[in-house]
Image 1 (cartoon, rainbow, N blue to C red):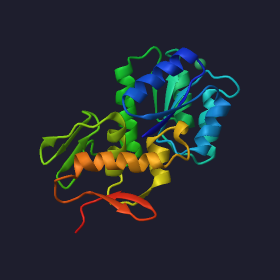
Image 2 (cartoon, rainbow, N blue to C red):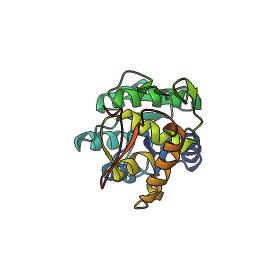
Image 3 (tube, helix red, strand yellow):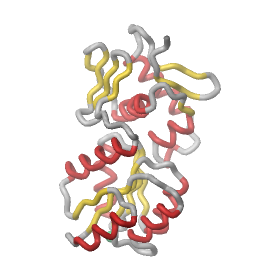
Image 4 (cartoon, rainbow, N blue to C red):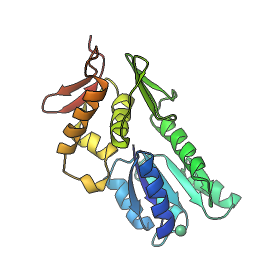
Length: 224
Ligand code: CA
C-alpha cells in the first residue's frame, strides 16, 4: 500500500513517514499543496494524508483539485486545531476522514487501515486464499495454520497480491503500490522479492499460490 503524505512541517512529515515505513507502507512526502497535487496525479496512491495549512495551495484547495481531476484516492485530513468548521468544510469538499493534531500514532494507523479497507472495497479485514491467511491489522500470515515470518517488504508485497487475488498484476502495478519513488524503474527488485515470498509461502506446500505470468507479471491464486 502506497501513501502520499502532504505536510510542510519537516519534523511532523518525517515522524509520520518513519512510522508508516515501519508499518510496511511505501511512503512519499510532498512539502506543499502544489507538490501534493502533482504527485497525486502522477502516482496511483492508495491513500493521501493531508495537512490543511500548507504553502502554495492549502489543504482545502488540494482536496478540491484532486476531486475535480477525478482522483478518488481516500484522503485523511490532519487539522491543527479542533475546529468544527474546518472539518465540515474538508469533508464536504471530498475528504474521507480527519484527525486533530496532536494525535496518537496508533490512532493514525487505525484510521489509515479503516480507509484502506473502504478504498479497496473489501469489508473483510482478513484475506484468505486456499489455506493462506493474511491479517493486515494483526500483521500476521499463516499457511495451513503455521505462522510465516515475513519482512516488512515481503508482507507488503503479499498483502498487495492477496488484496487482488486472481488478478494478474504487472511489475509496474506492483512497483507503484508497494515501493516508493526511490525505486522507479528498478523493476528487478520485484522478482527478487517474489522469490523470497515463494520460498516462505509456497515451498514444500500444495497448492502453489504465487504464479508467474510470462512477460506480464504475477498472480496469486489457487489454480484449478
Ligand atoms: Ca502545516
